[in-house]
Image (cartoon, rainbow, N blue to C red; front, side, top):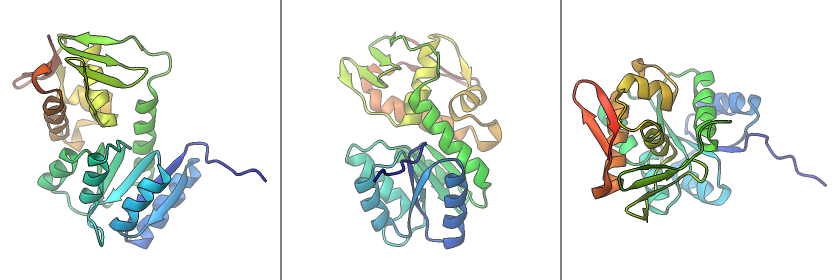
Length: 230
């Protein structure tokens, strides 16, 4: 007997509010995703390790383990599955902490389920690479980036980036020396407008710099934005 495989892959949703979990499940399923729901962080972490979803949607305020702790443990174990955080708080400190732990995106309740689905699709699109796009390896200074394999080397050493961190670095390295504003980077990498907050860009840049270490190639242009330079 054949087994139906969701055309877009499996999304893990860890959310303790049944109404929200059911709504997210409904909209993701309508878009062709398989959906597995857990109600607490401990079960969510186990499911992420067992099921290997294409994206994890994690509420931050979960029973058991907080969503931020689930993300931290996944990243420490070398699991770079894209993560989107859900939270009832529109608190910049909360948001920054989540991104620093390796999340790819952040949605504040109340949110549009259609927007959440669009964010999931955008993450997977970026991970797959743009159809017909420039897939040539890019080298800036001591950093080399392969868009096809989605790998990064700094001084010849592999660097592990989240999906969004990789896309940010790839976008900057595609045009070395070109200064991109934060608004341009939000639109190109995250796929949404500046009202979502340019602080998101700053946090991801800081994370990429930390991971590249002494081979860092991202330059800050105060009051303007960022560029990749040797």
